[in-house]
Length: 215
Image (cartoon, rainbow, N blue to C red; front, side):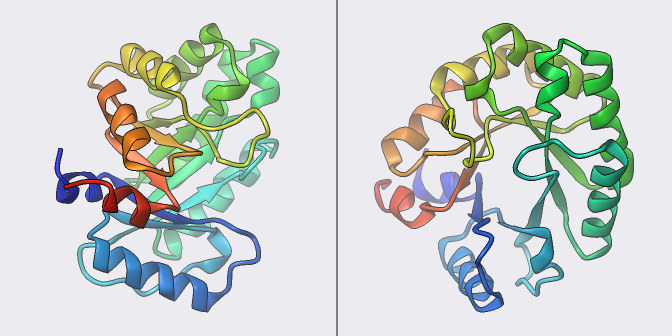
């Protein structure tokens, strides 16, 4: 894939809690220059003004996922009202570790309903999960109506995306859902490996460095 193709797979991301409105404006300007698919910002930054053709993504229940479902749903609903085109929610890891996948599905479904016709990605925090848990989270996400599954927040001490996790996620959801790789992707070689493993969206803060490594 060439530089333009990869750029259109990128959610150009700034989720540092100390980020300012000026930082977000700089992010948007860089996203426009690079030709990325979207910018992904914290919900407190919304609404933002973006050029035509640049989508706006935000996060929900971030970064722990340890929020009540109604709180996550209201956060997503508010984000959409404030102009978000896409919402990346964090799965409830407590429920995952307890094996209560009916409750995991219900949590995701509540957020999906709050998103309306906007796209929902489910962050499963794959580095903190077993293979069996990754598969079960992907199945719960699909059953709840999510549009994408996503590897990582980038904030968990267990780490970010891995080729193995992306391969497993893609094998589980087939071509029915998207797969987003995020967390620790800082160069073209890593980004390419994630795409080859099955990712069709990338969450990057190092978008410039990744794209500079491509033809």
